[in-house]
Amino acid sequence: MSRRPRVLVLSAAIGQGHDGAARELVRRLDRRGVSAHVLDWTDLLPTWGRRALRDLYAPSVHHTPALFDRIFTDLEHPRRPASVVTARLITVAEEPVLEAARDVDAVVTTYPLAGQTLGALRADGRLDVPALTYLTDPAAHRLWCHPGLDEHLTVTDATAADGARYGVALRSVGPLCAPRFSRPMPVATRGRVRAELGVPDDAPLALLVSGSLGMGEVEKAVDALGRHPRAWSVVACGRNTKLRARLADRERVVTLGWRDDVPELMAAADVLVHNAGGLSFTEALVAGLPAVTYRPIPGHGRANAAVLDEAGIAPWLHGPEELVAAIDRFGARPLRRRPPRPWWTEERDASAVVARYAGALAEPALSAAG
Image (cartoon, rainbow, N blue to C red):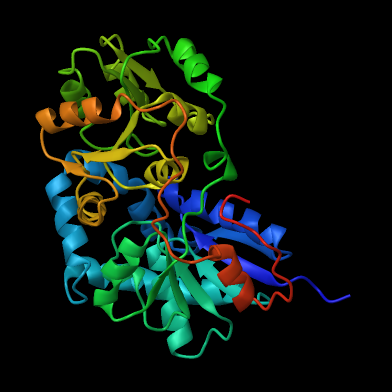
Protein backbone atom coordinates (compact mmCIF):
# COMPACT_ATOMS: atom_id res chain seq x y z
CA MET A 1 0.00 0.00 0.00
CA SER A 2 1.38 3.44 -0.95
CA ARG A 3 1.92 5.90 1.85
CA ARG A 4 -0.23 8.95 2.36
CA PRO A 5 1.14 12.22 0.97
CA ARG A 6 2.83 14.28 3.69
CA VAL A 7 2.66 18.03 4.21
CA LEU A 8 4.54 20.25 6.65
CA VAL A 9 2.63 23.34 7.80
CA LEU A 10 4.74 26.15 9.24
CA SER A 11 2.96 28.57 11.58
CA ALA A 12 3.88 30.91 14.44
CA ALA A 13 2.43 31.34 17.93
CA ILE A 14 2.07 35.10 17.60
CA GLY A 15 -1.59 35.75 18.37
CA GLN A 16 -3.97 33.03 17.17
CA GLY A 17 -4.54 33.90 13.51
CA HIS A 18 -1.59 32.02 12.04
CA ASP A 19 -2.08 28.96 14.25
CA GLY A 20 -5.84 28.89 13.74
CA ALA A 21 -5.52 28.79 9.96
CA ALA A 22 -2.77 26.17 10.20
CA ARG A 23 -4.87 23.88 12.39
CA GLU A 24 -7.85 24.13 10.08
CA LEU A 25 -5.68 23.40 7.05
CA VAL A 26 -4.37 20.25 8.74
CA ARG A 27 -7.93 19.15 9.52
CA ARG A 28 -9.02 19.58 5.92
CA LEU A 29 -5.92 17.89 4.53
CA ASP A 30 -6.57 14.90 6.76
CA ARG A 31 -10.05 14.59 5.24
CA ARG A 32 -8.41 14.53 1.83
CA GLY A 33 -6.16 11.65 2.80
CA VAL A 34 -3.08 13.82 3.33
CA SER A 35 -0.97 13.50 6.48
CA ALA A 36 -0.07 16.96 7.76
CA HIS A 37 1.44 18.40 10.91
CA VAL A 38 2.14 21.91 12.21
CA LEU A 39 5.54 23.21 13.24
CA ASP A 40 6.09 26.62 14.83
CA TRP A 41 8.65 28.44 12.67
CA THR A 42 9.76 30.59 15.60
CA ASP A 43 10.83 27.44 17.46
CA LEU A 44 13.54 27.06 14.81
CA LEU A 45 15.13 30.41 15.71
CA PRO A 46 17.81 31.21 18.28
CA THR A 47 16.48 32.37 21.63
CA TRP A 48 16.98 36.09 20.92
CA GLY A 49 15.04 35.92 17.68
CA ARG A 50 12.22 33.86 19.14
CA ARG A 51 11.80 36.24 22.07
CA ALA A 52 11.94 39.31 19.84
CA LEU A 53 9.06 38.06 17.72
CA ARG A 54 6.91 36.55 20.45
CA ASP A 55 7.49 38.79 23.43
CA LEU A 56 7.86 42.25 21.89
CA TYR A 57 4.90 42.17 19.51
CA ALA A 58 2.08 42.98 21.95
CA PRO A 59 4.06 45.44 24.14
CA SER A 60 5.18 47.44 21.10
CA VAL A 61 1.59 47.69 19.82
CA HIS A 62 0.37 48.72 23.27
CA HIS A 63 3.09 51.12 24.38
CA THR A 64 4.97 52.32 21.28
CA PRO A 65 2.43 52.25 18.44
CA ALA A 66 4.30 54.87 16.39
CA LEU A 67 7.46 52.77 16.54
CA PHE A 68 5.55 49.63 15.58
CA ASP A 69 4.01 51.46 12.62
CA ARG A 70 7.46 52.66 11.54
CA ILE A 71 8.90 49.15 11.73
CA PHE A 72 5.99 47.81 9.64
CA THR A 73 6.67 50.46 6.99
CA ASP A 74 10.44 49.92 7.09
CA LEU A 75 9.94 46.19 6.48
CA GLU A 76 8.71 47.11 2.99
CA HIS A 77 12.25 48.31 2.21
CA PRO A 78 15.00 45.65 2.19
CA ARG A 79 17.89 47.91 3.21
CA ARG A 80 16.39 49.50 6.30
CA PRO A 81 17.53 48.25 9.74
CA ALA A 82 14.34 46.36 10.61
CA SER A 83 14.54 44.51 7.30
CA VAL A 84 18.21 43.67 7.79
CA VAL A 85 17.50 42.07 11.18
CA THR A 86 14.48 40.25 9.81
CA ALA A 87 16.49 38.94 6.87
CA ARG A 88 18.98 37.49 9.33
CA LEU A 89 16.21 35.57 11.10
CA ILE A 90 14.85 34.32 7.79
CA THR A 91 18.30 33.02 6.83
CA VAL A 92 19.01 31.44 10.22
CA ALA A 93 15.84 29.37 9.87
CA GLU A 94 16.81 27.89 6.49
CA GLU A 95 18.75 24.83 7.66
CA PRO A 96 16.24 23.89 10.41
CA VAL A 97 13.40 24.19 7.86
CA LEU A 98 15.25 21.95 5.42
CA GLU A 99 15.72 19.37 8.18
CA ALA A 100 12.04 19.57 9.15
CA ALA A 101 10.97 19.22 5.51
CA ARG A 102 12.76 15.92 4.99
CA ASP A 103 10.41 13.19 3.72
CA VAL A 104 7.46 15.52 3.07
CA ASP A 105 5.82 16.14 -0.29
CA ALA A 106 4.99 19.83 0.14
CA VAL A 107 5.41 22.65 2.64
CA VAL A 108 2.89 25.41 3.28
CA THR A 109 3.02 28.29 5.72
CA THR A 110 0.54 30.67 7.32
CA TYR A 111 3.24 33.04 8.60
CA PRO A 112 5.01 35.59 6.38
CA LEU A 113 8.60 35.21 7.62
CA ALA A 114 8.39 31.44 7.16
CA GLY A 115 7.25 32.10 3.61
CA GLN A 116 10.40 34.13 3.01
CA THR A 117 12.51 31.21 4.23
CA LEU A 118 10.68 28.79 1.97
CA GLY A 119 10.87 31.13 -1.02
CA ALA A 120 14.63 31.54 -0.63
CA LEU A 121 15.15 27.79 -0.32
CA ARG A 122 13.06 27.13 -3.43
CA ALA A 123 14.75 29.89 -5.40
CA ASP A 124 18.24 28.48 -4.86
CA GLY A 125 17.15 24.87 -5.42
CA ARG A 126 17.80 23.56 -1.93
CA LEU A 127 14.14 22.74 -1.24
CA ASP A 128 13.01 20.24 -3.85
CA VAL A 129 9.32 19.99 -2.91
CA PRO A 130 6.58 22.57 -3.61
CA ALA A 131 6.29 25.47 -1.16
CA LEU A 132 3.17 27.59 -0.70
CA THR A 133 2.08 30.46 1.51
CA TYR A 134 -1.41 31.30 2.74
CA LEU A 135 -1.93 34.98 3.59
CA THR A 136 -3.96 35.34 6.77
CA ASP A 137 -3.93 39.16 6.54
CA PRO A 138 -6.38 41.06 4.30
CA ALA A 139 -3.51 43.33 3.20
CA ALA A 140 -0.48 41.96 1.39
CA HIS A 141 3.06 42.98 2.33
CA ARG A 142 6.53 42.45 0.91
CA LEU A 143 7.19 39.80 3.54
CA TRP A 144 4.13 37.82 2.47
CA CYS A 145 5.34 37.58 -1.14
CA HIS A 146 8.35 35.78 -2.62
CA PRO A 147 8.88 34.89 -6.29
CA GLY A 148 10.44 31.56 -5.33
CA LEU A 149 7.19 30.23 -3.85
CA ASP A 150 5.06 27.92 -5.97
CA GLU A 151 1.77 29.50 -4.88
CA HIS A 152 0.47 32.48 -2.92
CA LEU A 153 -3.01 31.73 -1.56
CA THR A 154 -5.29 34.38 -0.06
CA VAL A 155 -8.72 34.59 1.54
CA THR A 156 -10.34 37.22 -0.69
CA ASP A 157 -10.14 38.67 -4.18
CA ALA A 158 -9.29 42.01 -2.55
CA THR A 159 -6.12 40.59 -1.00
CA ALA A 160 -5.15 38.92 -4.26
CA ALA A 161 -5.49 42.24 -6.06
CA ASP A 162 -3.54 44.06 -3.35
CA GLY A 163 -0.66 41.60 -3.61
CA ALA A 164 -0.27 42.02 -7.35
CA ARG A 165 1.93 45.08 -6.73
CA TYR A 166 4.69 42.74 -5.54
CA GLY A 167 4.95 41.04 -8.90
CA VAL A 168 3.55 37.65 -7.88
CA ALA A 169 0.25 35.99 -8.70
CA LEU A 170 -2.12 35.42 -5.77
CA ARG A 171 -5.16 33.14 -5.74
CA SER A 172 -8.18 33.74 -3.54
CA VAL A 173 -9.29 30.40 -2.13
CA GLY A 174 -11.47 31.48 0.80
CA PRO A 175 -11.05 31.30 4.57
CA LEU A 176 -9.53 28.59 6.72
CA CYS A 177 -12.08 28.67 9.54
CA ALA A 178 -13.60 25.87 11.58
CA PRO A 179 -16.81 24.55 9.99
CA ARG A 180 -18.89 25.67 12.98
CA PHE A 181 -18.83 29.24 11.64
CA SER A 182 -20.52 28.38 8.36
CA ARG A 183 -23.21 26.06 9.72
CA PRO A 184 -26.68 27.57 10.16
CA MET A 185 -27.28 28.48 13.80
CA PRO A 186 -30.68 27.73 15.38
CA VAL A 187 -32.76 30.87 15.85
CA ALA A 188 -33.06 30.10 19.57
CA THR A 189 -29.29 30.47 19.98
CA ARG A 190 -29.51 34.26 19.82
CA GLY A 191 -31.92 34.55 22.73
CA ARG A 192 -30.23 31.85 24.79
CA VAL A 193 -26.76 33.41 24.55
CA ARG A 194 -28.06 36.90 25.23
CA ALA A 195 -29.87 35.66 28.31
CA GLU A 196 -26.66 34.03 29.57
CA LEU A 197 -24.78 37.30 29.03
CA GLY A 198 -27.51 39.43 30.60
CA VAL A 199 -28.17 41.35 27.36
CA PRO A 200 -31.80 42.31 26.54
CA ASP A 201 -33.11 40.47 23.52
CA ASP A 202 -34.11 43.67 21.71
CA ALA A 203 -30.93 45.68 22.38
CA PRO A 204 -28.39 46.34 19.61
CA LEU A 205 -25.32 44.27 20.41
CA ALA A 206 -21.74 44.82 19.24
CA LEU A 207 -19.13 42.11 19.65
CA LEU A 208 -15.72 43.77 20.11
CA VAL A 209 -12.66 41.69 19.26
CA SER A 210 -8.99 42.64 19.49
CA GLY A 211 -7.19 39.35 19.01
CA SER A 212 -6.18 36.78 21.58
CA LEU A 213 -3.93 39.39 23.25
CA GLY A 214 -6.57 42.11 23.62
CA MET A 215 -4.51 44.72 21.77
CA GLY A 216 -5.28 48.26 20.70
CA GLU A 217 -7.53 51.07 21.87
CA VAL A 218 -10.34 48.82 23.03
CA GLU A 219 -11.45 51.12 25.86
CA LYS A 220 -11.93 54.02 23.43
CA ALA A 221 -14.08 51.79 21.25
CA VAL A 222 -16.19 50.86 24.28
CA ASP A 223 -16.50 54.54 25.18
CA ALA A 224 -17.68 55.32 21.66
CA LEU A 225 -20.29 52.56 21.74
CA GLY A 226 -21.45 53.89 25.11
CA ARG A 227 -22.72 57.00 23.33
CA HIS A 228 -25.48 54.91 21.81
CA PRO A 229 -28.54 55.12 24.08
CA ARG A 230 -29.37 51.40 23.92
CA ALA A 231 -26.42 49.46 22.53
CA TRP A 232 -24.57 46.84 24.52
CA SER A 233 -20.95 45.81 24.08
CA VAL A 234 -19.62 42.30 24.52
CA VAL A 235 -15.83 42.61 24.67
CA ALA A 236 -13.74 39.54 23.91
CA CYS A 237 -10.60 40.32 25.93
CA GLY A 238 -8.85 37.08 25.05
CA ARG A 239 -6.02 36.43 27.48
CA ASN A 240 -5.65 40.09 28.48
CA THR A 241 -6.82 39.96 32.08
CA LYS A 242 -5.78 43.59 32.71
CA LEU A 243 -8.05 44.83 29.94
CA ARG A 244 -10.94 42.82 31.33
CA ALA A 245 -10.37 44.28 34.79
CA ARG A 246 -10.29 47.85 33.43
CA LEU A 247 -13.63 47.35 31.68
CA ALA A 248 -15.34 45.69 34.64
CA ASP A 249 -18.52 47.27 36.03
CA ARG A 250 -19.17 49.50 33.02
CA GLU A 251 -22.79 50.01 32.13
CA ARG A 252 -24.06 47.88 29.22
CA VAL A 253 -20.67 46.20 28.86
CA VAL A 254 -20.01 42.46 29.19
CA THR A 255 -16.37 41.35 29.31
CA LEU A 256 -15.25 37.86 28.39
CA GLY A 257 -11.98 35.99 28.70
CA TRP A 258 -10.85 33.26 26.34
CA ARG A 259 -13.91 31.53 24.87
CA ASP A 260 -14.53 28.51 22.66
CA ASP A 261 -18.15 29.41 21.79
CA VAL A 262 -17.36 32.24 19.37
CA PRO A 263 -19.87 31.04 16.72
CA GLU A 264 -22.64 31.30 19.31
CA LEU A 265 -21.45 34.75 20.40
CA MET A 266 -21.55 35.86 16.77
CA ALA A 267 -25.08 34.52 16.43
CA ALA A 268 -26.12 36.70 19.37
CA ALA A 269 -24.44 39.85 18.03
CA ASP A 270 -25.58 42.38 15.45
CA VAL A 271 -22.18 43.63 14.34
CA LEU A 272 -18.52 42.77 14.85
CA VAL A 273 -16.19 45.65 15.75
CA HIS A 274 -12.57 44.69 15.07
CA ASN A 275 -9.25 46.50 15.01
CA ALA A 276 -6.87 44.21 13.17
CA GLY A 277 -8.53 42.15 10.45
CA GLY A 278 -7.42 38.92 12.10
CA LEU A 279 -8.95 35.50 12.60
CA SER A 280 -12.11 36.73 14.35
CA PHE A 281 -12.85 39.03 11.41
CA THR A 282 -12.44 36.13 8.97
CA GLU A 283 -14.73 33.99 11.10
CA ALA A 284 -17.37 36.75 11.04
CA LEU A 285 -17.04 36.90 7.27
CA VAL A 286 -17.86 33.19 7.10
CA ALA A 287 -20.66 33.46 9.66
CA GLY A 288 -22.32 36.33 7.77
CA LEU A 289 -21.94 38.75 10.68
CA PRO A 290 -21.48 42.35 9.45
CA ALA A 291 -18.15 43.83 10.48
CA VAL A 292 -16.69 47.30 10.87
CA THR A 293 -13.16 48.47 11.61
CA TYR A 294 -12.65 50.99 14.41
CA ARG A 295 -9.36 52.37 15.72
CA PRO A 296 -7.21 49.72 14.01
CA ILE A 297 -3.89 48.86 15.57
CA PRO A 298 -0.80 50.29 13.84
CA GLY A 299 1.05 48.55 11.06
CA HIS A 300 -0.82 45.61 9.61
CA GLY A 301 -4.06 46.62 11.38
CA ARG A 302 -4.29 49.88 9.46
CA ALA A 303 -3.14 48.25 6.23
CA ASN A 304 -5.84 45.60 6.62
CA ALA A 305 -8.45 48.26 7.40
CA ALA A 306 -7.64 50.13 4.19
CA VAL A 307 -7.95 47.03 1.98
CA LEU A 308 -11.22 45.93 3.59
CA ASP A 309 -12.69 49.41 3.34
CA GLU A 310 -11.73 49.93 -0.30
CA ALA A 311 -13.16 46.54 -1.27
CA GLY A 312 -16.44 47.21 0.52
CA ILE A 313 -15.99 44.23 2.82
CA ALA A 314 -15.84 46.14 6.10
CA PRO A 315 -16.02 49.95 6.44
CA TRP A 316 -13.26 51.75 8.31
CA LEU A 317 -15.04 54.07 10.74
CA HIS A 318 -13.20 57.18 11.88
CA GLY A 319 -15.12 58.57 14.85
CA PRO A 320 -17.67 57.79 17.58
CA GLU A 321 -20.52 59.24 15.51
CA GLU A 322 -19.80 56.85 12.64
CA LEU A 323 -19.66 53.90 15.03
CA VAL A 324 -22.97 54.83 16.64
CA ALA A 325 -24.52 55.18 13.19
CA ALA A 326 -23.22 51.72 12.25
CA ILE A 327 -24.92 50.24 15.29
CA ASP A 328 -28.21 51.73 14.15
CA ARG A 329 -27.64 50.42 10.63
CA PHE A 330 -26.90 46.84 11.67
CA GLY A 331 -28.94 46.58 14.87
CA ALA A 332 -32.26 45.71 13.27
CA ARG A 333 -31.20 42.65 11.31
CA PRO A 334 -33.46 39.61 10.88
CA LEU A 335 -32.86 36.72 13.24
CA ARG A 336 -31.77 34.48 10.40
CA ARG A 337 -28.67 35.89 8.83
CA ARG A 338 -28.23 36.02 5.09
CA PRO A 339 -25.55 33.74 3.64
CA PRO A 340 -22.18 35.50 3.50
CA ARG A 341 -21.22 37.13 0.23
CA PRO A 342 -18.53 35.09 -1.55
CA TRP A 343 -15.53 37.41 -1.54
CA TRP A 344 -13.36 34.71 -3.11
CA THR A 345 -13.54 33.07 -6.55
CA GLU A 346 -11.95 29.62 -6.29
CA GLU A 347 -14.33 26.66 -6.28
CA ARG A 348 -11.95 24.61 -4.14
CA ASP A 349 -10.36 25.68 -0.90
CA ALA A 350 -6.71 25.92 0.14
CA SER A 351 -6.51 22.27 1.15
CA ALA A 352 -7.33 21.16 -2.41
CA VAL A 353 -4.50 23.27 -3.81
CA VAL A 354 -2.03 22.00 -1.22
CA ALA A 355 -3.15 18.39 -1.71
CA ARG A 356 -2.57 18.67 -5.45
CA TYR A 357 0.97 19.93 -4.92
CA ALA A 358 1.59 17.12 -2.45
CA GLY A 359 0.63 14.60 -5.11
CA ALA A 360 -2.58 13.36 -3.54
CA LEU A 361 -4.16 11.02 -6.05
CA ALA A 362 -7.67 11.45 -4.72
CA GLU A 363 -9.30 14.75 -3.88
CA PRO A 364 -12.68 14.05 -2.25
CA ALA A 365 -15.27 16.78 -2.70
CA LEU A 366 -14.80 19.17 0.18
CA SER A 367 -16.29 22.63 0.56
CA ALA A 368 -14.80 25.34 2.74
CA ALA A 369 -17.34 24.32 5.39
CA GLY A 370 -16.52 20.64 5.24
